[in-house]
Image (cartoon, rainbow, N blue to C red; front, side, top):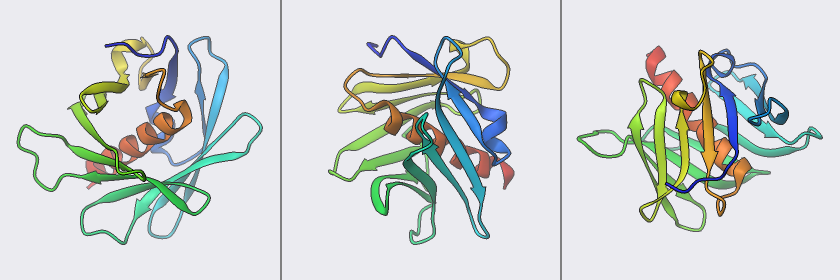
Length: 167
């Protein structure tokens, strides 16, 4: 496992409330903001940079048969996250990037630890074990994977898991 030397801190509890939260770096500095909006049929989160400029919008797509979240830049779908209908020792989710690249997701979602891989190489690792703070977990990103996109993927996965638990 060779991931970036930086760990980003995501507060699971704030995200579950649908409000705004900061994603911090390992030193406790604000790195990105996640602005939440509760729409009539779905929740939309927007990942913002420090200047408040939108980077990605994360939300449920109602146009798919499988439960699906989309990550958009402007109005362009960059990533699609689909939950598996049946999971027998396989991935819980499939992530497809607009260029056709498919990422696999495995892990222990109950304990908030999962790995995202591209062609068998880990590109995102998220775990509560990286931090000692309750309801918070760390996210590490491979150096050759875009950090804001990785964080948007983690927000999408987290939102899908929260909605599944609320059912």
